Length: 107
Length: 123
Image 1 (tube, rainbow over the protein chains, first blue to last red):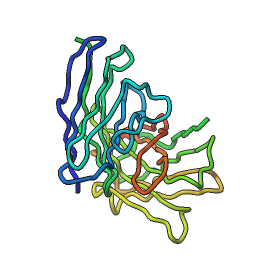
Image 2: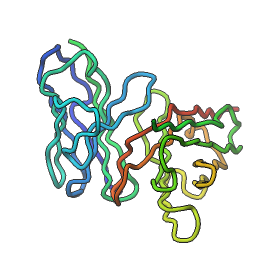
Image 3: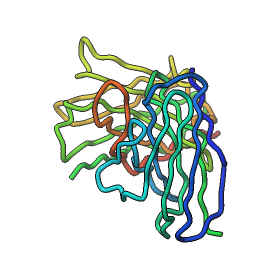
């Protein structure tokens, strides 16, 4: 099975900050990497699929990059509604594993 | 608009069974692959099952090792519904269970999720 790791596990940031979250796969997953945002008590929402494609309605301050085993999610200017937990997920092969999550909270 | 509504969760004793349902609306259900994903209290997301196809011959189904042999995914396209039959339940199956739509392609990504249904396994 492909294992996914994320760093950091949590971070504190201020409004307007540039935030970068890293996701690493235990083997190459080409570009089959997706990102989700989850707020407390709510279902996750798809942000980005296949590394860098923004899901409909997702603000352009979110971007993704990477290939192979190393990927990043960047929020160019953090907004109040962005405080949440972010998960990466590989869709290269079953089981379609998620990373452990990165919690972004207010500094 | 796309809606997924799960039901069927509840409190069950270890070794018991539950059947979860997910009612889909707002899209042509038969055109999309579907998954179940769960989240234990205070923990991360765990993908558990995926169904590709109509539910009849030619259907491809995947399971996570943690549920293989105990859980069965199925769908009824005529009723726009996805199901998860959960048998031999364990305490570690306690979680919020979400159904999610795969927006397409051979590499799943989940563009719409239900609100979840809570399963608690406890004596």
